[in-house]
Image (cartoon, rainbow, N blue to C red; front, side):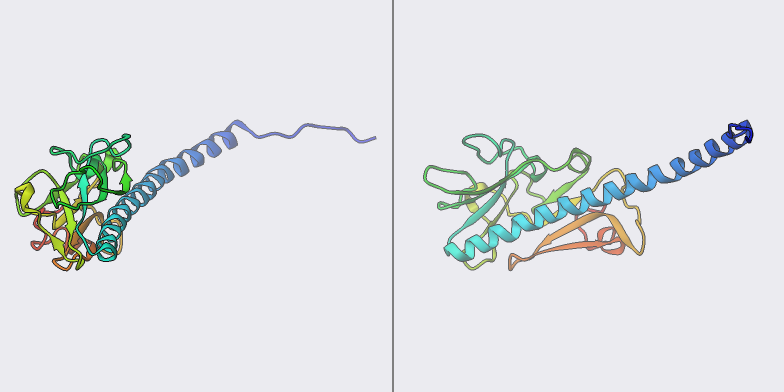
Length: 207
């Protein structure tokens, strides 16, 4: 009958294994964090653009003004636009029958969206020709971008989403942030190239 013996690892082998594991973790965590940040940014930009497309399509369908406005309480029972809010706080899309960027009696709320992720919200910017709040995007029955004189400010034309990665090139010339342009015809477009986001054509100055 053969002798039984236990096999294990030596202290040196254990130390090597721990060192290798430490290297893998050190390299892997930043890459995973960048992956999450990139997905978060893409999702946020897609949410904003989808909302703009929805507002425009509803305006065309209804042949009437539909507004997307910044709101601090989009999940409230009776939500309304917020004068001091930005789209990062959340937004409402509604049938703006009297074109005043406020939800009045009888006006239908088509969609409500909560705030953008904090990592993006606190570094993002908005431009309506330098007029400042209240921030809104309105669409006429033709689908064209529409300024609402009752608000005293122009409609949004540019939205910039940034996070802690700033103006980093994430690979292949793709920027960490996003620049969303809303044309006069009401069509939103995402720019994700470094030379676009950080270029002189971006009125918001890049991330």
